[in-house]
Image (cartoon, rainbow, N blue to C red; front, side):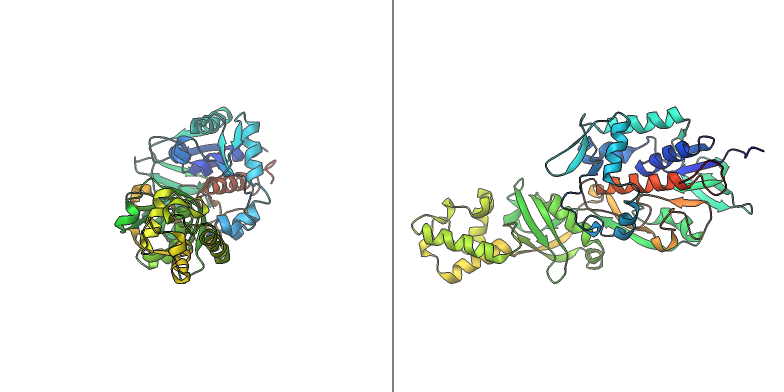
Length: 418
């Protein structure tokens, strides 16, 4: 006797949702699979990531510990990467006809430099496989029937029953989208913003808007939170990878501080102060008759170097030989530990990622099925997993979507194996 087809709903038409749907259909061709997206467009977030070029993953060069890229959920990602990692993603898309390239900063993009290469690949595959794709379907209620099937209700009045459901709705900025899962018995970690810029009320610094410093080390004094990378000075404060990475690692801490905190910038990019001491000491000894303004240590941008000179109480026309040891130490201290005050985070529209979501304590870490509700799966940012900038968040979506796709059709379905 043939089993009836399995009806699977994927709630959320983003990266994790499409990967889950495609992999589920490939593993269980007889399954009837439908993606439901609340917005008018599928994969809207994928479309704008990487400035519209789609930074879909990273080479992971320089990442020796998953925690460096995933402040929340690193243990889960390390485990799941054994099954589907960045190399798997690269091979997957190239196998589907999307040529990829790795930049010098280790970010991976389509050779086309267009996110539509990724979008067309995913939507085209889903269509080819027979996956149904419905937009403007916002989930408003979910409940489990006595036979363990699921009843879904949508804002447009549609109700439907499914055997299995995958939640891939992405992050919830205010937490309202997570309430229905809390009512089902899942633990929820309060979501808060991650990956945002810093407002800095320092008129002198803000006058340097447009200046990029590569690299810097940014840190929160008195904590272990630090990040390395390019820093962009803007008309409101600090942006660029260094600021975004720091906001990710320190998301909970900064939220608890009300986004009012000191931030230390090491303009040299060198973690050891002794390197700066040797550089500045050597400049002073060999260039006693030259002006401070004419020699820039560590190739610091001219405008920034002039600002640092004034910040230490010196004048650009002073000579290096006129600076005593105490004043040289002041320059070294400013170069390696320049303190500013964070006066809030960037506007909400700049926030691209949240930390928090459905707690991993409520999830089977092998299948990503709910421990509370059989037949309900979670993948992507809806879980308490998030990453720094650079393609790591999309990689988490591909990985978790793949894992859900491998397992959601199991449990007694002949021919569906992991």
